[in-house]
Amino acid sequence: MIHARLLGASVLLGVLALAGCSQGTSSTTTSAPSSAAPAAPVASPSVSVPAKFAAGGVRVALVRQLSSGDYFEQWLAGAQAEAQALKVTLEVSSGDGNNDKQALNLEQAVQQKADAIIVDHGFADTVQPAIKKAADAGIPLVAFDVDPGTPKAVALTQDDHKIAELALGALKADTGGSGDVIYVYVSGFAPLDRRNEVWTTFKKDNPGIKEVAQIGVVNNSTASAVADQAKAALQANPDVKAIFAPYDEFAKGAAIAVKELGLQDKVKIYGADISTADIGVITEPNSPWVATATTDPSNVGRIAVRAAALLVAGEQVDPALKIPPALVTQRQLLDGKIANIEQLTGAVPELTTPDVARVPWAAP
Ligand code: SR1
Image (cartoon, rainbow, N blue to C red; front, side, top):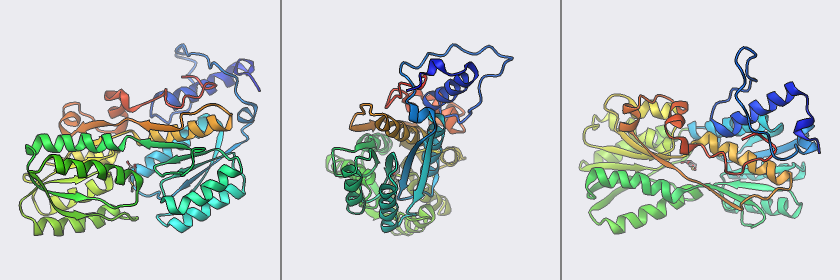
């Protein structure tokens, strides 16, 4: 073990600056404070930097099912920034929506003896056999948004039930709990399945809400595919008041359809997730997308890497990490003049969760 206090002063400043950035904000700035400005006091890490990390010898395989779309891009940016801050080499692969390809990538990560593996999305059937091999080989594993099928893995999720509850709470408040609704859903994706559980209960509890159409597709151009489907569903159901679209690519597609049909004053969209581009869509004049329930995707990517790093170091990690979301409304964004994710996380600090899977050898 190499203790952080033994590192040269300039190196230590750099490490602290990187780590502070990694755990406190969504910024990707990695430079040390300039000599012109006095450095802000920074708390010392409480634990030695493990030697393998200090030497830059830790390899974490990130095995993704999907990589296109704002959510997945931001998530990756967060994961990469945290990996850089912790001196972890992140080896990224994507199945590009192909489950067999993702399973193969996962098998390879196990064979190549990564120090830890993060599985990002995927279907339980296709990833669990290789996850079991990783567990049998003693490779620590973090599973994000997919059931790993073994208690040996850390299961990382967003609080998907809460995501759906927040979005549907806004839908109910705006509609008065009655009206025709289009629902966007694709089964098999764990987060969407959990949000669907809430939708099912919500319909039972609110008999005035009528699901008149269910649409949905997930592929490399989800938004435009959903736009086509939503357009047809809106044309077939002229009394629709709301679209429940709990994934930002779904909500973007629904927004395209509503705008193309000129229905902005009649049909409102309740979504999930956020990005700077999404904020642009939500805040454009007369946008139908009025609320979204979300975490900060880049914060979640950072947590995945922190959890993997802790496991590599033999530290305890909560086996079920659940990240809480917040409701973000169009009104709040407009009133707060919020135009990007940095401004949003400034205005809604609970979107940043530095204490989740905190790395004790990195500064808070
Ligand atoms: C296709 S699944 C898409 C969802 O995964 C993440 O949980 C995001 O929140 C997104 O909505």
